[in-house]
Length: 197
Image 1 (cartoon, helix red, strand yellow):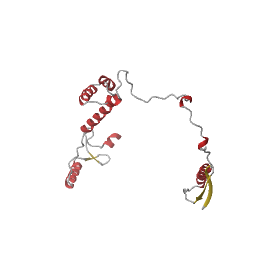
Image 2 (cartoon, one colour):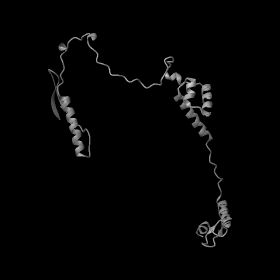
Image 3 (cartoon, helix red, strand yellow):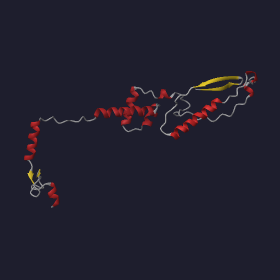
Image 4 (cartoon, helix red, strand yellow):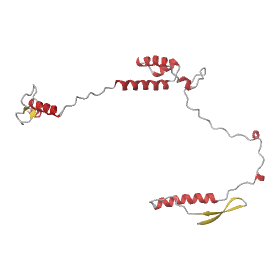
């Protein structure tokens, strides 16, 4: 435990009791020393007395008209969709598509018309139309996906019977004596032996 004297304001002194506390645990000494240096610098900066003006020394505020305002930095306008001066509708109103408008717009898009042209003819947001169009296409693809047809499950006896039948349909190759399924081009040789000759 350690005691320190601090002066938070001129003419005011405080005695502060410092109790040790573990701040962090490190596996590398160099990193621990670096962090400890940063913490000590912060502690020294906070321990320095701050210059505070006494309330009587503060001058009365001058009228704001006498103070010249600093030149304002140019402000970049927020990114917005361009609007004609005649139509000053908010962007949210332009994105409200009715069901009838969407049906007509989708028909025109299916015919091959550009999204921006279709949206412009309705005086609506093309981004909103693009989102609705993408959602519709996704839903169409999901509804028309092919469901894989699985073969009916065979019993073990049926599997053995089909394997035996497949072996009966095969013949022995005249060169390598392996079994193969004969074809019209090669009735007595397997595919491997017929390549070699």
